[in-house]
Length: 147
Image 1: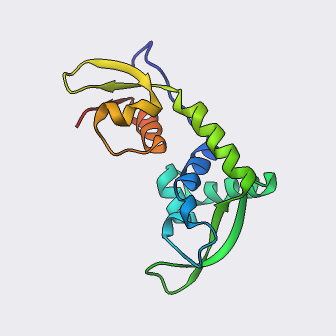
Image 2: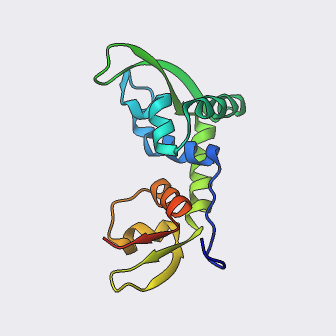
């Protein structure tokens, strides 16, 4: 990455909190999607599954996440899943507001290089991206491009 460009770095715990907040509508359901399993969280947060397990232990210890064994859609076996607690939900929303202010670089439809807040990037790019996806692209790719 070139000198002077903003460097985006999102902590693993913040990635997980944002991911679980996005899937909070599945909380307390008997059957959930694979997004709440270790492989699903690992894929969404760009982590190796063992790192997800370590992060989840820390989040459970803090009381931000609870662990459950549930049935997974399109899977015959039950798996370990996680969901936010009330405390975790408040923490995830708080972190989301802070991370949403992170400056990221985008290239708009005219090819102009702009620095905008991560919360605005999806709208400015006319893309259906979550805050976590914007931050992950900015962290790994550097500049997000329109279209």
